[in-house]
Image 1 (spheres, rainbow, N blue to C red):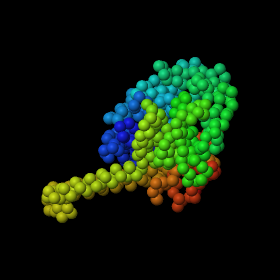
Image 2: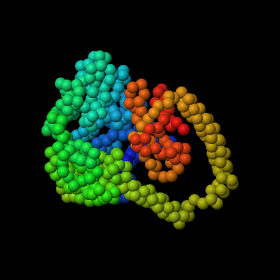
Image 3: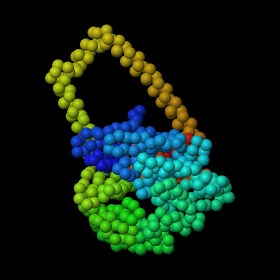
Length: 457
Protein backbone atom coordinates (compact mmCIF):
# COMPACT_ATOMS: atom_id res chain seq x y z
CA UNK A 1 0.00 0.00 0.00
CA UNK A 2 1.31 3.45 -0.95
CA UNK A 3 0.51 6.57 1.07
CA UNK A 4 1.31 10.23 0.40
CA UNK A 5 2.81 12.61 2.97
CA UNK A 6 3.88 16.24 3.25
CA UNK A 7 7.21 17.53 1.91
CA UNK A 8 7.14 15.52 -1.34
CA UNK A 9 7.33 12.19 0.45
CA UNK A 10 5.49 8.99 -0.35
CA UNK A 11 5.13 6.31 2.32
CA UNK A 12 5.24 2.57 1.79
CA UNK A 13 4.48 -0.08 4.41
CA UNK A 14 6.51 -2.96 3.01
CA UNK A 15 5.35 -6.38 4.26
CA UNK A 16 7.86 -8.94 5.47
CA UNK A 17 9.23 -11.37 2.87
CA UNK A 18 10.87 -14.62 4.05
CA UNK A 19 12.90 -13.72 7.15
CA UNK A 20 12.91 -9.98 6.55
CA UNK A 21 11.24 -7.55 8.91
CA UNK A 22 8.22 -5.50 7.87
CA UNK A 23 9.56 -2.08 6.95
CA UNK A 24 8.14 1.43 6.94
CA UNK A 25 9.78 3.33 4.05
CA UNK A 26 9.52 7.08 3.39
CA UNK A 27 10.59 7.95 -0.15
CA UNK A 28 11.54 11.53 -1.05
CA UNK A 29 10.32 11.85 -4.63
CA UNK A 30 11.74 15.35 -5.08
CA UNK A 31 15.29 14.18 -4.33
CA UNK A 32 14.73 10.62 -5.59
CA UNK A 33 15.98 8.90 -2.45
CA UNK A 34 14.79 7.12 0.66
CA UNK A 35 14.28 9.62 3.45
CA UNK A 36 13.65 7.14 6.28
CA UNK A 37 13.14 3.45 7.09
CA UNK A 38 11.87 1.81 10.26
CA UNK A 39 10.76 -1.75 11.14
CA UNK A 40 7.25 -2.34 12.43
CA UNK A 41 5.56 -5.32 14.07
CA UNK A 42 2.89 -7.29 12.22
CA UNK A 43 1.19 -10.68 12.10
CA UNK A 44 1.05 -12.94 9.05
CA UNK A 45 -1.83 -10.96 7.55
CA UNK A 46 0.34 -7.79 7.29
CA UNK A 47 -2.69 -5.51 7.87
CA UNK A 48 -2.56 -1.92 9.12
CA UNK A 49 -4.97 0.97 9.64
CA UNK A 50 -3.87 4.58 9.15
CA UNK A 51 -5.00 8.21 9.39
CA UNK A 52 -3.62 11.75 9.07
CA UNK A 53 -3.90 14.24 11.94
CA UNK A 54 -1.90 17.34 12.96
CA UNK A 55 0.74 16.77 10.25
CA UNK A 56 1.29 13.23 11.47
CA UNK A 57 0.83 9.97 9.62
CA UNK A 58 -0.44 7.52 12.26
CA UNK A 59 -0.84 3.78 11.68
CA UNK A 60 -1.59 0.72 13.80
CA UNK A 61 -0.61 -2.93 13.36
CA UNK A 62 -0.93 -6.06 15.45
CA UNK A 63 0.80 -9.33 16.17
CA UNK A 64 0.37 -10.81 19.64
CA UNK A 65 -0.33 -7.22 20.79
CA UNK A 66 -1.56 -3.92 19.39
CA UNK A 67 1.07 -1.44 18.12
CA UNK A 68 0.82 2.20 17.03
CA UNK A 69 3.31 4.42 15.21
CA UNK A 70 3.50 8.02 13.95
CA UNK A 71 5.66 9.64 11.28
CA UNK A 72 6.23 13.42 11.15
CA UNK A 73 8.41 13.55 8.03
CA UNK A 74 11.67 13.05 9.94
CA UNK A 75 11.31 9.99 12.16
CA UNK A 76 9.00 7.16 13.16
CA UNK A 77 7.82 7.21 16.76
CA UNK A 78 6.29 4.15 18.40
CA UNK A 79 3.46 5.23 20.70
CA UNK A 80 3.18 3.93 24.24
CA UNK A 81 0.19 1.60 24.50
CA UNK A 82 -0.91 -0.65 27.36
CA UNK A 83 -0.58 -4.39 26.76
CA UNK A 84 -3.63 -5.01 24.57
CA UNK A 85 -4.64 -7.93 22.38
CA UNK A 86 -6.84 -7.67 19.29
CA UNK A 87 -8.58 -11.02 18.87
CA UNK A 88 -10.37 -10.14 15.62
CA UNK A 89 -9.05 -9.12 12.22
CA UNK A 90 -7.66 -5.59 12.44
CA UNK A 91 -10.20 -4.23 9.94
CA UNK A 92 -13.12 -5.65 11.93
CA UNK A 93 -11.75 -4.44 15.27
CA UNK A 94 -11.07 -0.84 14.20
CA UNK A 95 -12.68 2.26 12.70
CA UNK A 96 -11.29 5.61 11.52
CA UNK A 97 -13.21 8.86 11.83
CA UNK A 98 -12.22 12.54 11.97
CA UNK A 99 -8.50 11.76 12.03
CA UNK A 100 -8.95 9.28 14.90
CA UNK A 101 -8.39 5.51 14.96
CA UNK A 102 -10.69 3.55 17.28
CA UNK A 103 -9.84 -0.05 18.25
CA UNK A 104 -11.62 -2.70 20.32
CA UNK A 105 -9.24 -4.95 22.27
CA UNK A 106 -8.79 -7.02 25.44
CA UNK A 107 -6.50 -6.05 28.33
CA UNK A 108 -4.20 -8.38 30.30
CA UNK A 109 -7.08 -9.76 32.39
CA UNK A 110 -9.39 -10.26 29.41
CA UNK A 111 -11.69 -7.27 29.89
CA UNK A 112 -12.97 -5.34 26.86
CA UNK A 113 -11.15 -2.06 26.22
CA UNK A 114 -11.63 0.68 23.63
CA UNK A 115 -8.61 2.65 22.37
CA UNK A 116 -8.65 6.03 20.62
CA UNK A 117 -5.51 7.25 18.78
CA UNK A 118 -5.55 10.80 17.41
CA UNK A 119 -2.15 11.88 16.08
CA UNK A 120 0.25 11.06 18.91
CA UNK A 121 -2.48 11.15 21.61
CA UNK A 122 -3.72 7.85 23.01
CA UNK A 123 -6.73 7.30 25.27
CA UNK A 124 -8.25 4.07 26.57
CA UNK A 125 -11.47 3.29 28.40
CA UNK A 126 -12.59 0.09 30.11
CA UNK A 127 -15.90 -0.79 28.48
CA UNK A 128 -17.01 -2.74 31.52
CA UNK A 129 -16.93 0.53 33.49
CA UNK A 130 -17.99 3.12 30.92
CA UNK A 131 -20.91 1.09 29.57
CA UNK A 132 -22.01 0.21 33.11
CA UNK A 133 -22.76 -3.35 32.06
CA UNK A 134 -21.41 -5.65 34.78
CA UNK A 135 -22.56 -8.68 32.78
CA UNK A 136 -20.92 -7.59 29.50
CA UNK A 137 -20.33 -10.62 27.28
CA UNK A 138 -19.65 -9.28 23.80
CA UNK A 139 -18.81 -5.98 22.12
CA UNK A 140 -18.20 -5.30 18.42
CA UNK A 141 -18.41 -2.47 15.93
CA UNK A 142 -21.74 -2.27 14.16
CA UNK A 143 -21.68 -3.78 10.68
CA UNK A 144 -24.35 -1.28 9.53
CA UNK A 145 -22.11 1.81 9.61
CA UNK A 146 -18.47 2.81 9.10
CA UNK A 147 -18.65 5.15 12.09
CA UNK A 148 -17.18 4.16 15.51
CA UNK A 149 -20.48 2.75 16.79
CA UNK A 150 -20.53 -0.45 18.84
CA UNK A 151 -23.15 -2.95 19.87
CA UNK A 152 -22.66 -4.39 23.36
CA UNK A 153 -24.47 -7.43 24.74
CA UNK A 154 -24.98 -8.80 28.25
CA UNK A 155 -25.67 -12.24 29.67
CA UNK A 156 -29.41 -11.68 29.29
CA UNK A 157 -28.98 -11.26 25.51
CA UNK A 158 -29.88 -7.56 25.51
CA UNK A 159 -28.15 -5.22 23.04
CA UNK A 160 -26.97 -1.68 23.74
CA UNK A 161 -25.79 0.86 21.16
CA UNK A 162 -22.92 3.29 21.87
CA UNK A 163 -20.88 5.68 19.74
CA UNK A 164 -17.33 6.92 20.40
CA UNK A 165 -15.95 10.43 20.06
CA UNK A 166 -12.50 11.78 20.92
CA UNK A 167 -12.30 15.56 21.17
CA UNK A 168 -11.22 16.99 24.51
CA UNK A 169 -11.83 13.57 26.07
CA UNK A 170 -12.66 10.02 25.03
CA UNK A 171 -16.39 9.51 25.46
CA UNK A 172 -19.05 6.93 24.70
CA UNK A 173 -22.49 8.23 23.69
CA UNK A 174 -25.42 5.96 24.47
CA UNK A 175 -28.55 5.64 22.36
CA UNK A 176 -31.96 5.36 23.94
CA UNK A 177 -32.94 2.62 21.51
CA UNK A 178 -31.18 -0.70 20.98
CA UNK A 179 -31.93 -1.41 17.31
CA UNK A 180 -31.40 0.26 13.95
CA UNK A 181 -33.00 3.39 15.38
CA UNK A 182 -30.31 3.40 18.07
CA UNK A 183 -27.57 3.32 15.44
CA UNK A 184 -29.27 6.19 13.57
CA UNK A 185 -29.53 8.15 16.80
CA UNK A 186 -25.80 7.85 17.52
CA UNK A 187 -24.98 8.66 13.88
CA UNK A 188 -27.01 11.83 14.25
CA UNK A 189 -25.03 12.73 17.39
CA UNK A 190 -21.68 12.13 15.70
CA UNK A 191 -22.75 13.81 12.46
CA UNK A 192 -24.68 16.77 13.82
CA UNK A 193 -26.69 17.42 10.67
CA UNK A 194 -27.91 13.82 10.75
CA UNK A 195 -27.17 13.27 7.04
CA UNK A 196 -24.62 10.96 5.43
CA UNK A 197 -23.81 10.40 1.76
CA UNK A 198 -23.93 6.79 0.63
CA UNK A 199 -23.70 4.76 -2.56
CA UNK A 200 -26.72 2.71 -3.57
CA UNK A 201 -25.89 0.64 -6.65
CA UNK A 202 -24.91 3.25 -9.26
CA UNK A 203 -26.71 6.10 -7.50
CA UNK A 204 -25.49 8.55 -4.86
CA UNK A 205 -27.99 9.40 -2.13
CA UNK A 206 -28.18 11.70 0.89
CA UNK A 207 -29.42 9.52 3.73
CA UNK A 208 -31.17 11.24 6.63
CA UNK A 209 -30.36 8.90 9.52
CA UNK A 210 -33.06 10.45 11.70
CA UNK A 211 -35.96 9.90 9.32
CA UNK A 212 -34.32 7.03 7.40
CA UNK A 213 -35.18 8.71 4.09
CA UNK A 214 -32.85 8.80 1.07
CA UNK A 215 -32.71 11.54 -1.57
CA UNK A 216 -30.94 10.86 -4.87
CA UNK A 217 -28.15 13.33 -5.72
CA UNK A 218 -27.85 13.99 -9.48
CA UNK A 219 -24.15 13.99 -10.42
CA UNK A 220 -22.46 13.38 -13.82
CA UNK A 221 -20.66 10.35 -12.37
CA UNK A 222 -21.23 6.66 -13.13
CA UNK A 223 -20.05 3.58 -11.19
CA UNK A 224 -19.36 5.84 -8.18
CA UNK A 225 -17.33 5.26 -5.05
CA UNK A 226 -18.12 7.47 -2.04
CA UNK A 227 -15.53 8.27 0.67
CA UNK A 228 -16.26 10.48 3.71
CA UNK A 229 -13.67 13.23 4.31
CA UNK A 230 -15.17 14.81 7.45
CA UNK A 231 -18.60 15.44 8.98
CA UNK A 232 -19.54 17.85 6.21
CA UNK A 233 -17.80 16.76 2.99
CA UNK A 234 -17.51 13.63 0.90
CA UNK A 235 -15.35 12.62 -2.05
CA UNK A 236 -17.18 10.98 -4.97
CA UNK A 237 -15.12 9.26 -7.67
CA UNK A 238 -16.47 7.59 -10.80
CA UNK A 239 -16.55 7.58 -14.58
CA UNK A 240 -17.81 10.31 -16.88
CA UNK A 241 -19.78 7.77 -18.98
CA UNK A 242 -20.76 4.12 -19.14
CA UNK A 243 -17.79 3.02 -21.27
CA UNK A 244 -15.46 0.57 -19.55
CA UNK A 245 -12.49 2.84 -20.27
CA UNK A 246 -14.40 6.05 -19.58
CA UNK A 247 -12.68 9.14 -18.28
CA UNK A 248 -12.57 9.34 -14.49
CA UNK A 249 -14.23 12.24 -12.68
CA UNK A 250 -14.03 13.21 -9.01
CA UNK A 251 -15.59 15.93 -6.91
CA UNK A 252 -16.07 16.97 -3.32
CA UNK A 253 -19.70 17.43 -2.28
CA UNK A 254 -21.41 18.46 0.93
CA UNK A 255 -23.75 16.27 2.96
CA UNK A 256 -26.68 18.02 1.27
CA UNK A 257 -25.34 17.19 -2.20
CA UNK A 258 -23.90 20.62 -3.08
CA UNK A 259 -20.82 20.49 -5.32
CA UNK A 260 -17.86 22.00 -3.44
CA UNK A 261 -15.02 21.36 -5.90
CA UNK A 262 -14.34 19.27 -8.99
CA UNK A 263 -10.92 17.61 -8.77
CA UNK A 264 -8.67 18.26 -11.79
CA UNK A 265 -6.69 15.46 -13.46
CA UNK A 266 -8.91 12.86 -11.81
CA UNK A 267 -7.89 10.14 -14.30
CA UNK A 268 -4.27 10.57 -13.22
CA UNK A 269 -5.05 10.79 -9.51
CA UNK A 270 -7.69 8.04 -9.34
CA UNK A 271 -6.64 5.66 -12.09
CA UNK A 272 -7.16 2.80 -9.64
CA UNK A 273 -10.32 4.07 -7.94
CA UNK A 274 -12.06 0.69 -8.31
CA UNK A 275 -9.49 -0.94 -6.00
CA UNK A 276 -11.27 -2.15 -2.89
CA UNK A 277 -8.79 -0.53 -0.51
CA UNK A 278 -8.49 2.98 -1.98
CA UNK A 279 -8.98 5.69 0.66
CA UNK A 280 -8.94 9.47 0.95
CA UNK A 281 -8.25 11.96 3.75
CA UNK A 282 -8.31 15.75 3.87
CA UNK A 283 -6.09 17.99 6.03
CA UNK A 284 -5.10 21.66 5.72
CA UNK A 285 -6.72 22.09 2.27
CA UNK A 286 -4.81 19.05 0.98
CA UNK A 287 -6.51 15.90 -0.26
CA UNK A 288 -4.53 12.69 0.41
CA UNK A 289 -5.20 9.61 -1.74
CA UNK A 290 -3.86 6.12 -1.01
CA UNK A 291 -4.15 2.78 -2.81
CA UNK A 292 -2.12 -0.29 -3.71
CA UNK A 293 -0.90 1.21 -6.98
CA UNK A 294 -0.40 4.90 -6.21
CA UNK A 295 -0.21 7.65 -3.61
CA UNK A 296 -1.18 11.23 -4.40
CA UNK A 297 -1.88 14.64 -2.90
CA UNK A 298 -3.63 17.65 -4.37
CA UNK A 299 -3.77 21.09 -2.78
CA UNK A 300 -7.40 22.15 -3.10
CA UNK A 301 -6.57 25.87 -3.49
CA UNK A 302 -3.54 25.78 -5.82
CA UNK A 303 -4.35 22.41 -7.51
CA UNK A 304 -0.70 21.41 -7.04
CA UNK A 305 -0.42 17.65 -7.46
CA UNK A 306 2.12 15.08 -6.28
CA UNK A 307 1.85 11.47 -7.49
CA UNK A 308 3.90 8.42 -6.57
CA UNK A 309 3.17 5.18 -8.42
CA UNK A 310 4.49 1.64 -8.62
CA UNK A 311 6.61 2.79 -11.56
CA UNK A 312 8.23 5.39 -9.29
CA UNK A 313 8.89 2.71 -6.72
CA UNK A 314 10.47 0.49 -9.39
CA UNK A 315 12.50 3.47 -10.64
CA UNK A 316 13.89 3.91 -7.14
CA UNK A 317 15.19 0.32 -7.03
CA UNK A 318 16.64 0.67 -10.52
CA UNK A 319 18.34 3.90 -9.42
CA UNK A 320 19.81 2.09 -6.43
CA UNK A 321 21.11 -0.65 -8.73
CA UNK A 322 22.66 1.90 -11.09
CA UNK A 323 24.32 3.68 -8.17
CA UNK A 324 25.79 0.40 -6.97
CA UNK A 325 27.07 -0.34 -10.49
CA UNK A 326 28.77 3.07 -10.65
CA UNK A 327 30.35 2.48 -7.25
CA UNK A 328 31.79 -0.85 -8.40
CA UNK A 329 33.16 0.80 -11.55
CA UNK A 330 34.83 3.46 -9.41
CA UNK A 331 36.42 0.79 -7.21
CA UNK A 332 37.75 -0.95 -10.28
CA UNK A 333 39.33 2.28 -11.52
CA UNK A 334 40.99 2.67 -8.11
CA UNK A 335 42.45 -0.83 -8.25
CA UNK A 336 40.15 -2.02 -5.42
CA UNK A 337 37.68 -3.93 -7.51
CA UNK A 338 36.42 -7.35 -6.59
CA UNK A 339 37.17 -10.16 -9.05
CA UNK A 340 36.77 -13.92 -9.17
CA UNK A 341 40.52 -14.31 -9.58
CA UNK A 342 41.29 -12.35 -6.40
CA UNK A 343 38.52 -14.11 -4.52
CA UNK A 344 39.70 -17.63 -5.53
CA UNK A 345 43.29 -16.72 -4.71
CA UNK A 346 42.21 -15.54 -1.27
CA UNK A 347 40.15 -18.70 -0.58
CA UNK A 348 42.59 -21.36 -1.80
CA UNK A 349 46.03 -19.85 -1.30
CA UNK A 350 45.75 -17.84 1.92
CA UNK A 351 45.31 -19.27 5.42
CA UNK A 352 42.58 -16.77 6.34
CA UNK A 353 40.69 -17.66 3.18
CA UNK A 354 40.89 -21.40 3.87
CA UNK A 355 39.65 -20.86 7.44
CA UNK A 356 36.77 -18.77 6.07
CA UNK A 357 35.95 -21.47 3.53
CA UNK A 358 35.79 -24.18 6.23
CA UNK A 359 33.64 -21.98 8.50
CA UNK A 360 31.26 -21.17 5.68
CA UNK A 361 30.95 -24.86 4.82
CA UNK A 362 30.14 -25.77 8.43
CA UNK A 363 27.63 -22.91 8.66
CA UNK A 364 25.89 -23.96 5.42
CA UNK A 365 25.74 -27.58 6.64
CA UNK A 366 24.15 -26.58 9.97
CA UNK A 367 21.68 -24.24 8.28
CA UNK A 368 20.71 -27.00 5.83
CA UNK A 369 19.95 -29.40 8.70
CA UNK A 370 17.90 -26.76 10.54
CA UNK A 371 15.90 -25.83 7.40
CA UNK A 372 15.31 -29.51 6.57
CA UNK A 373 14.04 -30.22 10.09
CA UNK A 374 11.87 -27.10 10.06
CA UNK A 375 10.36 -28.08 6.70
CA UNK A 376 9.50 -31.57 7.95
CA UNK A 377 7.99 -30.18 11.16
CA UNK A 378 5.99 -27.57 9.22
CA UNK A 379 4.64 -30.23 6.83
CA UNK A 380 3.67 -32.59 9.68
CA UNK A 381 1.99 -29.76 11.59
CA UNK A 382 0.07 -28.63 8.53
CA UNK A 383 -1.02 -32.22 7.72
CA UNK A 384 -2.18 -32.71 11.31
CA UNK A 385 -4.16 -29.48 11.27
CA UNK A 386 -5.74 -30.41 7.95
CA UNK A 387 -6.80 -33.85 9.25
CA UNK A 388 -8.37 -32.25 12.36
CA UNK A 389 -10.10 -29.50 10.40
CA UNK A 390 -13.86 -29.25 9.81
CA UNK A 391 -15.31 -29.02 6.30
CA UNK A 392 -17.23 -25.77 5.85
CA UNK A 393 -18.85 -24.06 2.87
CA UNK A 394 -17.49 -20.54 2.31
CA UNK A 395 -18.29 -17.58 0.06
CA UNK A 396 -15.47 -15.87 -1.86
CA UNK A 397 -15.48 -12.12 -1.05
CA UNK A 398 -12.24 -11.00 -2.72
CA UNK A 399 -9.65 -12.37 -5.15
CA UNK A 400 -6.30 -10.57 -5.34
CA UNK A 401 -4.17 -11.46 -8.36
CA UNK A 402 -0.39 -11.74 -7.86
CA UNK A 403 1.86 -9.09 -9.34
CA UNK A 404 4.08 -11.77 -10.88
CA UNK A 405 3.53 -15.27 -12.26
CA UNK A 406 4.31 -18.33 -10.12
CA UNK A 407 3.00 -16.47 -7.05
CA UNK A 408 -0.27 -17.45 -5.31
CA UNK A 409 -3.60 -15.70 -5.60
CA UNK A 410 -4.93 -14.29 -2.28
CA UNK A 411 -8.49 -15.52 -1.75
CA UNK A 412 -10.62 -13.92 1.00
CA UNK A 413 -13.65 -15.93 2.15
CA UNK A 414 -16.52 -15.57 4.62
CA UNK A 415 -17.92 -18.61 6.40
CA UNK A 416 -19.99 -19.51 9.45
CA UNK A 417 -18.68 -21.63 12.31
CA UNK A 418 -20.51 -22.18 15.60
CA UNK A 419 -23.13 -19.57 14.49
CA UNK A 420 -20.40 -16.91 14.11
CA UNK A 421 -19.58 -15.24 10.79
CA UNK A 422 -15.80 -15.46 10.22
CA UNK A 423 -13.40 -14.21 7.57
CA UNK A 424 -10.15 -15.74 6.43
CA UNK A 425 -7.60 -15.72 3.65
CA UNK A 426 -5.93 -18.58 1.79
CA UNK A 427 -3.28 -18.80 -0.90
CA UNK A 428 -4.18 -20.50 -4.17
CA UNK A 429 -1.86 -21.59 -6.96
CA UNK A 430 -3.65 -21.72 -10.35
CA UNK A 431 -2.07 -25.04 -11.21
CA UNK A 432 -3.65 -26.60 -8.08
CA UNK A 433 -7.18 -25.14 -8.36
CA UNK A 434 -9.42 -23.18 -10.64
CA UNK A 435 -9.38 -19.56 -9.45
CA UNK A 436 -12.92 -18.85 -8.10
CA UNK A 437 -14.89 -15.66 -8.74
CA UNK A 438 -16.19 -13.27 -6.08
CA UNK A 439 -19.49 -14.60 -4.76
CA UNK A 440 -18.69 -18.22 -5.63
CA UNK A 441 -19.20 -20.94 -2.98
CA UNK A 442 -16.21 -23.16 -2.25
CA UNK A 443 -15.38 -25.83 0.34
CA UNK A 444 -12.72 -25.13 2.94
CA UNK A 445 -11.30 -26.99 5.92
CA UNK A 446 -11.34 -24.88 9.11
CA UNK A 447 -9.18 -25.70 12.14
CA UNK A 448 -10.95 -24.08 15.17
CA UNK A 449 -7.92 -24.20 17.49
CA UNK A 450 -5.29 -22.67 15.20
CA UNK A 451 -7.89 -20.53 13.32
CA UNK A 452 -6.31 -21.69 10.04
CA UNK A 453 -8.23 -22.53 6.88
CA UNK A 454 -7.29 -24.75 3.95
CA UNK A 455 -8.73 -25.16 0.49
CA UNK A 456 -10.31 -28.55 -0.12
CA UNK A 457 -8.74 -30.10 -3.20
